[in-house]
Length: 512
Image (cartoon, rainbow, N blue to C red; front, side, top):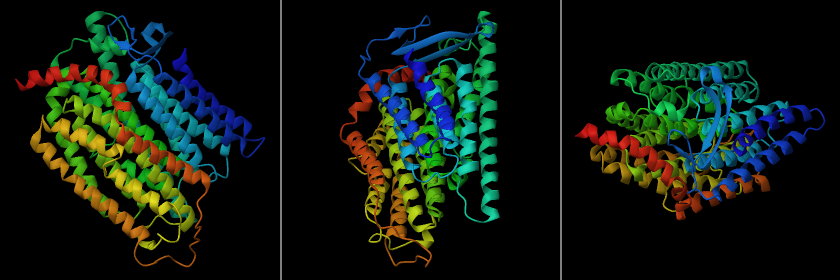
């Protein structure tokens, strides 16, 4: 009964925030913070269980924690949640970023606070649902409903200045995000139904169970079509070139907490889904297309890294760098290397933390200089305390400086994937030079050089304790992972090895 609590606490907490908002302006902040702290404490407590004790299912899969109850038995749909080391790590990451999102929006949200936290907590609740669902219908439900609170965040609390064009653009970008997400959901739904139909034809049992659908016997052509459907649905959310068009625009017009949720939580659920579902349910066809997917990852790395150079908006630059790093993840997943798989998890968690920190700092900077345009900045190093130093650290962490988790993740991805595809990984490694250049260029334009601020800019030199606490906490976590990555690798090793072993068997057969 523990697993449903992770979904129910933020879901009911969002409703509570909405109801209590009318009694006090600040109460919704405290309710949201306390409830997400409870989720964080519970997710940490899971790590102290003996992760070598498994709950076996009737299909032979093993989970550390499992909860199942009938939901729509006529169609073989159950409310089936399960977690292993991989799920628990993503759960901890989601709860950490949830707390950071709440702290970031503490003094920035001035109106409809209860409704704001309803949407924020529901994004977290549905994201946790995605991470825990092992019934594909339930997984689809969470995948689909997560769109709506994210849509409302950008509509009601998105970036706006006092002109009609900006307001109109916000609605256009929100609708663009909605349409991309709807396409992703529709493709995923058809793919799930096709897979369930194939299972029904071969066994005469209607089931949406993850374990049952893993054993479906289907011809290669049909398996390939369904696998590509799953891959396309997840690629839109990660996102991968050429399905990335919605992400930079979304970051441009979303509030800081919305950017945090999208980059740190929503996108990571797609990476998790690619690992959990695509290569495990369709190992044969995934192995056949592995080389093409790795090339797609390489194109994503370089294309978006080069576009990042032309950006003048800081949020757009960070958004494009985020997409570029997604290419590394794609290369690692389809390399079928155990070391690269471990690197994917370290990189996913570390990059989510460093990107979240950068978005927080961008929000703090915007509050002081009222612009995100780097052409209007410059010479801010001595004008604002703390923020420039933290910005420098998280920028170099983002490009993978030794001593941070990002370095460990990137090194393991490149080292692990190198064995399987030397040429492709060698080319990909050159992108690290590009990412270093645009990260340092960003710091130089904002904090160094001649003052170029307009007269109406208000400089607030002091940084609040809350802002320092957020940056220091994320900094400590990044260094901790960088110095002692075993805290992640020990927990994720077994589930990742199980996923990879199914996939790598077909990689070997394909190469033979």
